[in-house]
Image (cartoon, rainbow, N blue to C red; front, top):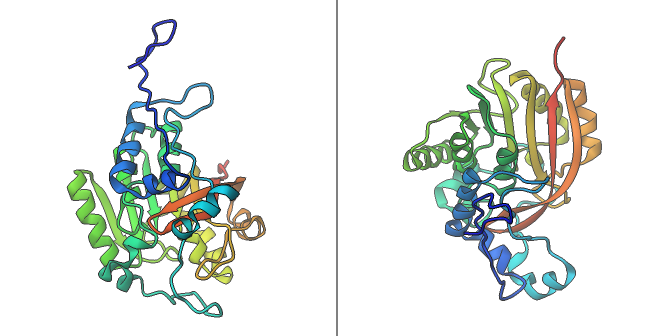
Length: 283
């Protein structure tokens, strides 16, 4: 425990020395370690524009990439490069066989969502929806942060796993099987919608429907926290400024800055974008 010169605090300081360039990434991918870091967010606050907890940097500089290339690269599903990705992946099969664990699973709530929640505490009676919620790690994070939390996914098996996770973590989460292109919710139901890795599987021709549905279920002034791949790599259809600008403003969604980020998964680090998007306030 460390107290400042004015005896303010307490401050808890974690000091780590990494033994090799790939160690921060492997720590991210270890569910037990990631859960500890994620849980710390509940007891910290941002100071002077910096988060209460800084996750270790996992950006892959050239030297790190050369040293750890064998383990740091994300290996995407084996999908033909020319395939129409609308419905091409059998999501249930990935969850039933457990292949998701070594691909996109993280094991704990995503670090970028944890940071957002630390900087933007939930208001009383706030409601949140996680699009493509998978096995529910981000749903648990949202519920712990105080949101009345819902999750939607096309995979019934993913939702079964998410329900098990919520029960184990002793949080209340409402789960629905459905498509993000036809959300099973009333209009203006949510203050916050989160998407980590759903939008980048939606073909360009369906993204206007995605934007319309998200705008419909968001309350006026509500926020979409969008994260997805920025690389053109099967099976990803990347997030781009052009694509967002083509579809989201037309639905009444105001784009924030498109920021580069690293999306950490058990399968590696995906070069990604993060964007805060707000629904325009209706007069």
